[in-house]
Amino acid sequence: MLLISDLHLGSHLKPRMRGEYVHLAARIDEVLPRFLDHYAGQGPWQLIINGDFIDFWNIELAGKDARGGEALAVDRLHAAFDAYPGVEDALIRFLEAGNTVVFVTGNHDAELLYPGVRAAIQGRLEGGMAAAGGEAPSATGTFRIGDVLPGRVHFVSWFLHEQGGVWIEHGHLFDAACATTDHLSPTREGRLVQSVAEVATRSFANLMPEIDYDAPDRYSGMDYVRWMFARGLRFVLLVVLLYLRTVGRVLGLWLLRGGRVDRQGRATHEERLERIAANAGLQMSTLTALQEMAPPPSSATVGGVLSVTALDVLLTLFFVVGLGILVGPLIGATRLIGGLVGVVLAALAIRGILRRRGKRAIAEDMRGVAVDVGRLTDVPLVLMGHSHRGSIDIYDGVVYGNSGCWLDGSHLVVRRDPETRLPAEIELRRWRNGGVTILQREGIAAAERPESAAAVAGVGNVGASA
Image (cartoon, rainbow, N blue to C red; front, side):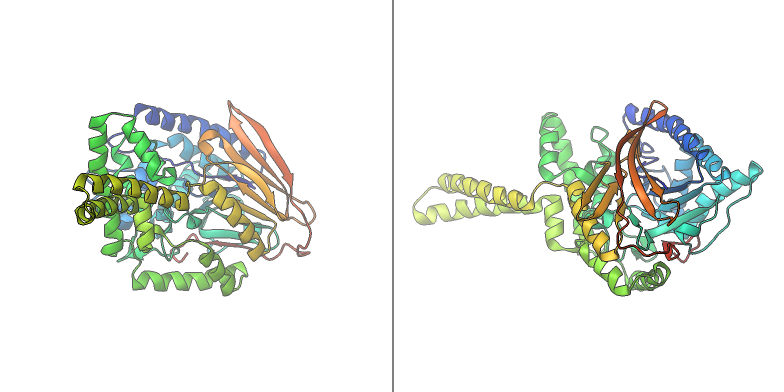
């Protein structure tokens, strides 16, 4: 099994973008095909692209963005593939070599939930194979990961599960800023709802070529403040205006219910959840417990909205200082003295808020979550992406592997025991300068596993029903 994630293809496809990101896109189209060709002949492989393969959040199409919904998502998909012809050709060659490709849905490519987007990917890869004289992969419906056939493309809405073996998901559901409710069908009037991080990306980061493209995923409020003041007063004014615009749109998610899934979306989510439980051989109570492990999406709670926008800090500042100005004259002090006392008290209150909130540390949070996921699903190996930090850690008998971000060459290789066919060893590798370096290797304990690997299930469907 070969696992990569967080390629963010298409993140340069917007009007304002630094030249270095355009250069990075060209570099990806050169290097990723070499990576795929390197592994293609060593298979057969199950290539798990564990989320954020295409960065739909960052793709803006002049004259088409007003369309919205599934049609716009398909247009963005084609724009991304058109921008990386080398990657598309390499995926076709990878399939022709008898390997399997599985796309797991992430937060930046939740559009993979749209049947039209899945069909468009199939059309490009299958059409490419047919044009090359190969056998086109066909729609296989719900599949078992241990039984997938060579040369086929699959899509996964949430996770892959192998009984007694491995659990694979992107991991964004455990990141409140990047998550939505009813994640198997997070729609309102048939369109995907946006997370707070997506709104921040589209309303702020996409208009700021000076900022890293993934800043909304990892910056705290204070990180933005330090970044802003380091660039001068004029830049501060621009950032403040964009910040106010972003706050307005985030508040709209909550107040106007724009970020809330409607009744039809919730019903579809529940229907898919029941089907997934049956396909994966898991109890509904297990899937419910997994959902309850995730924090509420930031867009769904007052505290989440206030925290992610730093409005709790601003409201505390204005309220305490204003109160000091009003109360000062009542106790025999001047308004100035009252205001100064208010500033001091507000600073202490804000310090307490920031201390309780803590620094955004999604990589560390996901390590803790992985142990709970492993225990709940009774697997010794949990694999995720999302954090952009490749690692292998072992906690209480659960091996947690994160594939990191492929942009720095990080990826995971899982080898199976030749007899049980269950995962036996995991390696964190780095692709660089045309070669592979093994950064870490860990064995996977075989204790308390089922004798047979027959109950291997995946949650995915190449059709519209998944």
